[in-house]
Picture 1 (cartoon, helix red, strand yellow):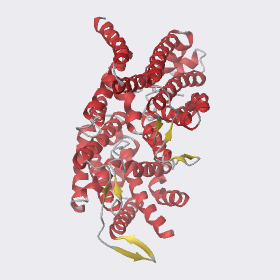
Picture 2 (cartoon, one colour; picture 1 turned 120 degrees about the vertical axis):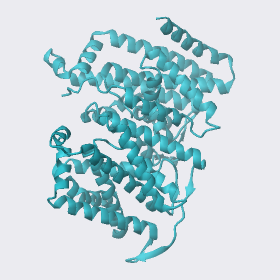
Picture 3 (cartoon, helix red, strand yellow; picture 1 turned 60 degrees about the horizontal axis):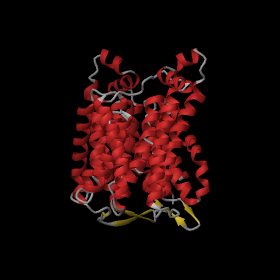
Picture 4 (cartoon, chains in turn blue, green; picture 1 turned 180 degrees about the horizontal axis):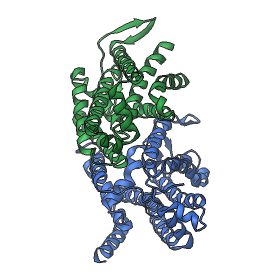
Length: 280
Length: 231
């Protein structure tokens, strides 16, 4: 209980402190916060639905690309669910890897997206937004994401989602149709990931194919592994990974990949998979 | 145009067979193979002949660490290993892009080809033909592989040394990927992430072939040729 409260206080302190610092720290904090929203969206899919995605960079990156090509296209972001959800046919144990492979495919595909002579390897420039505005919007959307997930989890529909997660066959036996319930959960998760993607594009002012790279695909998993799969700890872990990566990358190239490799190898020995294999 | 397509089809078919073997016999979707392929390319800066040895060592390492893990956990470990190899290459070589040189160019049916690429084709063709002969012949080893593919526990009950066979498969597959990478990446720019593309392409072919169950190994080459023609 004490640790939980301390972690929450620490997160709130981390949300407030960057306001008093310069552009660089604010950009770092915005990046960490956006990735924390991304991690929350992933954690919802993993905890409430029992689906672990290694391809969450697909809704994240596709929405960022749509926003960069035309800001009006951001309303299409929830449709990114249809890119990830069909992969659930592979079942819970293969889904993480199928989604990861699909995200790497997008990574290569993004190099060939050219609109009006823009794009390709260079990526797209995004309309300029003041970093202060992006940061405050990120804080607001972080709180919104938390409240949304909390409310949905506690609701009647949230209980149905958890029932489907635990045993699809039993859920069907008590009259729950698993498909729309799962679809709803995926939509919530992908929409939040999309929001994070759009904020990321707005904060950095450009979108490049690297948005589909394993850095983003595996980030939520690594943050969740470090954070012990608890929501507030995962937010702190997001700050930790981003902070370490920014400060140590000049000395060790792409330092975050060392954290990634260690976290993934560790998780393969400690982490339980697929709460229920009884999929329909 | 048909010569490079045929060459690519043979190489990718042999890589796809390796992925199928890993999945069906060693019970792992080996995601480290892309990085092992890249490692082969980087090792060719020193000597192409050492690449199979390094590949085999990584295969052995993978076997030791994943022998008690189920498919999901073993695959997860291989992903971690892939990222570790990638990062190792970044730390050692620093530069993001490195140009790998080649020894000579010659003409094959009026098609200009690097000697190393031709060698990769020959090794892949030899691997493919010998595996097809192995698959079509009714030998005891083939029977053992089939039993392991169908039911691992059953195979152990029959007294088959599944761990030994798993180790052999992972070592051969890793050594083969490393060897082909050291030859096929020559004459171009390499980055630590270049192997993913080759892995995904081979994985795509292997996934289609896997749908044909018993006929998968035999149909790998026609599928690979079809996919290469299409792309």
